[in-house]
Amino acid sequence: MLKEKWEQWMRILRNDIGIDLGTANMLVYVRGKGIILNEPSVVAVNKKTGQVVAIGSEAKDMLGRTPPHIMAVRPIVEGVVSDFEVTEEMLRYLLSKTQIISKKILRPRVIVGVPSGITNVETRAVRDATKNAGAGEVYIIEEPMAAAIGMHLPISKPLGSMVIDVGGGTADIAVISLGGVISSKNIHIAGDKLNDDIATYIRSEFKIIIGEKTAENIKVNITALLSGETSLETKARGRDLITGLPREVVVTDSDIREAISHSIERLVEATKEVLEITPPEVLSDIMRRGIYLAGGGALINGFAEILEEEVKISVYLADDPLTCMVRGAGIILEKLEDFKDVLIPDENDVSNKTR
Image (cartoon, rainbow, N blue to C red):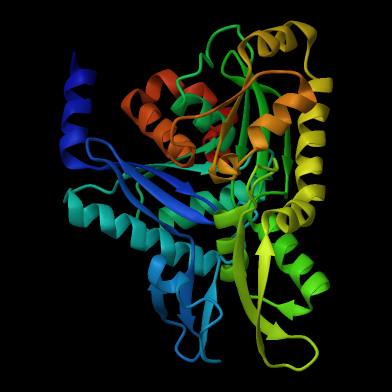
């Protein structure tokens, strides 16, 4: 009874926040409000003063367009913190946004998603940056586990579930049962790698240099891993390698298929490698129930069909795959005690208990 009363008071006095701190996008869930923020994980910094100029969409618009003294950076690279101070500023911005929406007295309780298999040092960096940004309690969860919870998969039952979370910097492939990860693989082939593949291909084949945003727009607009009856095409504008002058070329979906084919093959191979090390009984569950796709990369046209053809297992795309992870964090916040076992333990708490 007292515990329930205490929990009710805490809900009134503090925000409970779930954060998907992705390489490409940052999403924020607030209990009682839902997803309140979905912006690019980009920060613009003035190198002369060290001050943050812009965060999110405004900063992304500056990519490739800044003067020498302003630097637009992605503080999260391949799912982990690459610039601690800038990440801290980004988190402070996210937490301040939640305070504006629902003002609370106490510091918020925050759950942050991280890629599976990251090191203790990398986990500690996320935890410390979040606390320094203004959080009270900080909990860390592996992204494929949070995505599985967000898709309402039976993760706590003796039943195998396979989740592939294709984000901006990494693809997380995990097999989950009884609240734990049985087998997994984290590879650095995701949205950003496909952008690089497209830029490299256009440089090689068309002899023009395009920017990161142009490559991403091409990927979003015309990528189709299965050839259709009609060809998709778009214009790519950049700098001619020979003359140094501006030039425009027409790029088709067949060009993009060729550009990203190796990365897609590697993603399929990684999935097969995880299946190969999965226990037979769990593999039987996956064959019966299928593979679930989450993350922005899951939206690549034809990826689910190609994966299904290669592994001979049904593949299902999550409802709104971009928000699976942060929705999972929201579910955990509602019943934190029930999900304590799926969270990555805090080293400090563990060391204190063992003394």
